[in-house]
Image 1 (tube, rainbow, N blue to C red):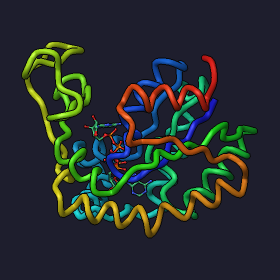
Image 2 (image 1 turned 90 degrees about the vertical axis):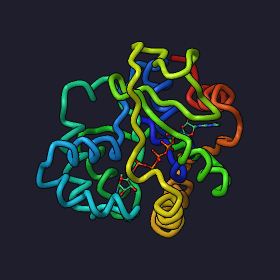
Image 3 (image 1 turned 120 degrees about the vertical axis):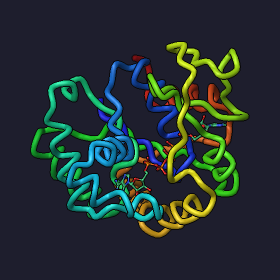
Image 4 (image 1 turned 90 degrees about the horizontal axis):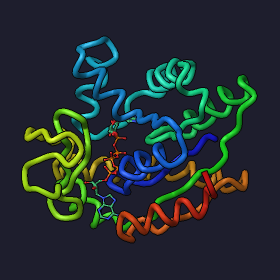
Length: 216
Ligand code: AP5
């Protein structure tokens, strides 16, 4: 199965992808996570992406398309995957269609997490992750059971993303509406697009997604 989760920064794509990975045995492919790993490693790609990401602009299509094309060739993707943060432009959507067609594959569902922009600033500026296992938390909406201790691995160090400040978030939201939202019509015309209320609480969003996707 191949799923695509769409929605602006903070809509819950990463949070829900992790839950769907476990529920359906799929692999999450987050272009944001891949780019952050490239920045951390100091690779050519990372050096090119670093300043662009810090501003909240989109990284050039050719770099992203090459990165995802290489990723879906890896063996773990054979069991199916969830696209989180890709495609983000019409040329990326067209490149994805060509990549999947070459492999005889299709997108099964494209699901938009519909949310209010203003609420996204609060979600993003309150977000943090475990420095050891990467589990995500939020100052208000998803706290660890014991303050300062990761529920999953017990670590006590946490990190916040460099682009999770209010100014950059506003630019990321603008980029979404200008460059990414047009893809929704592209998928609607193909009869693939579903809407889910991303303003519901996290468990309720997961339940809605499972309702669209069906049984594991
Ligand atoms: P990327 O990492 O993809 O960031 P993003 O799209 O801005 O999305 P986020 O990760 O911020 O949000 P999310 O929807 O995953 O929300 P989350 O689940 O964490 O991209 C970063 C940058 O990389 C881009 O700006 C760009 O420069 C570059 N890039 C990446 N892909 C690219 C591409 N294809 N082309 C070009 N450039 C690219 O949730 C947020 C918080 O809210 C969490 O704390 C969570 O706990 C909480 N939360 C989630 N759901 C709910 C809920 N229902 N109720 C209450 N709280 C909730």
